[in-house]
Image (cartoon, rainbow, N blue to C red):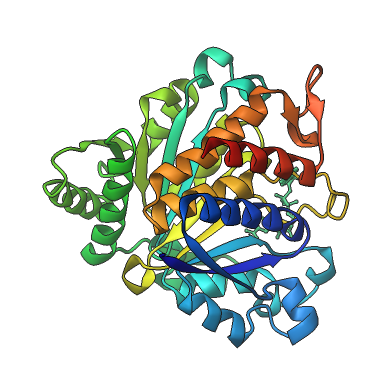
Length: 364
Ligand code: NAD
């Protein structure tokens, strides 16, 4: 029996409530599909600061390095907001991304049929939306050199950031994106600003070259301004999108609106160690306003488990079981508070986990 090592890092706030629900779904899938999971839990973020004095203890990083995949909750909260930047809980997550070289961030924006009316956009626009945005995560404007600020004697100032990419950085995220597109509808939109930026021209050149290795995938190049418009005008035209760091930061948040609620959005960060380790986490944060009340929506965390099965373990059929179980529970009208509306049944975090677990069990 294949055995996978899973590092479980619940973190803070509702991370500690939703992560156990995600873990139990993975355990269930393991039992049903004959996969062995070896779970080990470790501290990260604010809880690690409290217990070990640092947001990313060496033992946590070592565990992540040895794992096949990392199941992450969320980090942060008002208790640690006054700490200096370098010691804040977020450093725990950024540290793992950096140390494991997680260069591709995958964020799906799926509009669930029964939640269409939770989106601020019209039903006719969002219905049927099912997009995967792949954002390059370790290069570009956020890391490029030179960067900095100079002050002028006349009281003015000048600031510089640099959007820089090597062809190697572009190629590896492009390959990750084509691989994802192959598991979806085999359509890839590469988003850039090649009519203005020389870095985008290199991006386009490299993506076009990589496309030759994926003849089954239909590639189109889209300018970032057109993409921003099309996402709110006709989102169903997209399947898989790949783009550089800054454009991806903005477009993935824009696409998130299509899904209706933060509590529904999973994500994956892939890369490092030959693409071996992936980190899977809900997009949302620690939600201090509802933490400890047992009302958080565990679906984003549970759908992160589905992504873990699909992208780190190549278990697409098992991922489909999890996705279908979530859909069935929603179809039957069960809702946590964030997605609750008149005529639906209000449930808490654990109850939502119970309902999804029972559907997963029944489906095998
Ligand atoms: P947030 O995502 O925690 O919450 C935003 C709003 O969405 C809140 O009203 C919250 O109640 C609601 N919400 C979020 N997830 C939900 C869920 N699963 N179920 C129901 N409602 C949900 O964002 P924020 O308030 O800006 O940040 C709170 C803390 O989380 C901050 O310390 C921030 O730094 C941290 N944060 C961490 C991550 C991460 O670890 N990846 C991401 C974002 C924010």
